[in-house]
Length: 255
Image (cartoon, rainbow, N blue to C red; front, top):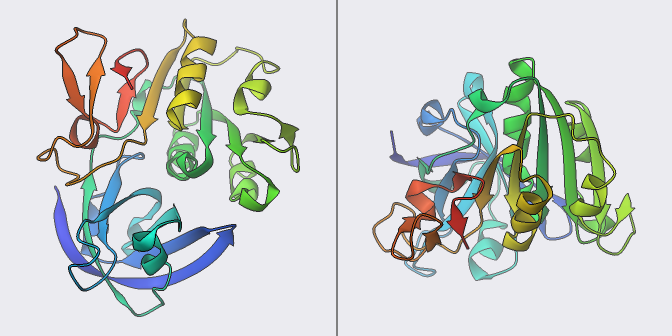
């Protein structure tokens, strides 16, 4: 059930270049279950900026009534959000969208993320591990300065890092790592820039896959049609990434 709540900031810290980890507490957490969902955050207690900011959920802590978000502070809205401190209030709407289907994995899954598309894969990895699914994590970043959660992912399974400039891990993109890994998995999950998602689909056309799209959003609940994309069903068939997704089976979305 979608709820709106003024939640309490428990902790906020910078974990990489322009990347912040924000943990909040409140009753809304009880509605969260599916990894890959997101929340819509009002970053200030005024009407400027007017629109909420969609932020993915990186980890759910139901026993504490807390959840963690990871975001990049790059515009006015997220820069204001980065100023929040422990004890502050935060207006949150969520959970929103459809997440990753954990039940689709059978024995081994590849989790493929790029940049700010990495955070939702962490909660996914935790839930897959709890089901006894082996997870392999292939994560791409711009540079060593932008890398985050590497050690946390390593605690959950084999983890590979790619950086565009080669300052950490493999030089290049996640596809450079995928080319070297065996195809002994049954399911893949991916979140990141659209070109990366397209490349992953081309790499594994015979595998079962689920992709989370980072489309620009307005309302976050499917009312404004700001995030529509065409589908492969027909030229007149469209989906709304915020409410129909953001996660879709591979081969459905024409971004």
